[in-house]
Amino acid sequence: MTQQQTVFVTGASAGFGDAIARRFVAEGARVIAVARSADKLEKLAAELGDAVLPVTLDVSDPDAVKSAVENLPQDWQQVDVLVNNAGLAKGLEPAHKADLADWDEMIATNVRGLAHVTRALLPGMVERGRGHVINIGSIAGTYPYPGGNVYGATKAFVHQFSLNLRSDLHGTGVRVTNVEPGMVGGTDFSKVRFDGDQDKADKVYQGTTPLTADDVAESVFWAANQPKHVNINVIELMPVVQSFSALQIYRE
Ligand code: 8X3
Image (cartoon, rainbow, N blue to C red; front, side, top):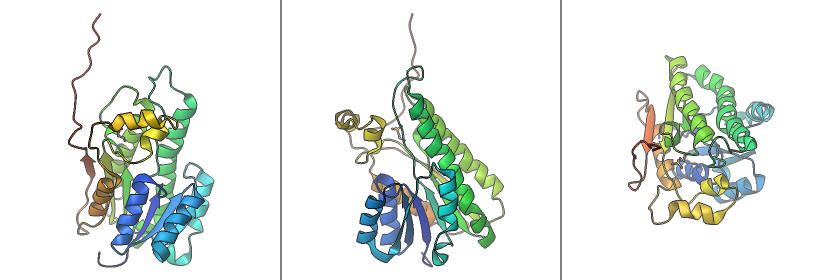
């Protein structure tokens, strides 16, 4: 890193976001740590000190996003890297049984929230002729699986939005990357998906060595620190224990 980066990380109070914030701060960057929970953010800020600016914000609330970005302290306004990490999966039921409230929540955060945060920070990046949007996608946006329905579709949005951003930002110097992890253990991802059922969540990772949040943070940090003429478009990573399977055939 040649100069101190200012990194805006959403969903920074846990999981990937927490690991990403720590990774950047460890390398001398400062992080605007955004999350819904003020308490958890305060803990992170207390631990990492002045390098962290905690911002309590629910990215699914468009007015709150606009005002949070407009009201960043003067010396934190020049964001070099936006990591759109806030996102969630809710439910693994087939589409005809899924809870519509779960679908709405995923769309509100993974799609609308990500789009609004990006739209709020992009003009400054374009004006400065530098910046980097790093989205956290998922292999679920590329490979369908039973119960993936809306979750996978939101991540397909993130993939295509990332590529389309690159087209729009052509010639501006602003970079865009989509990081698409597969199975990651040690976070609340599955607990949230299964509505707090820890046993069900633990079973997902039983007998496996999944990716860790630190593995994802490493990919994000690496993409952000390539020479400035290099744009990493997409990073897809999986644990060795995860791979592809045959298409399913229903036999009558
Ligand atoms: C999560 C990856 O494999 O659980 O984004 O769908 S997976």
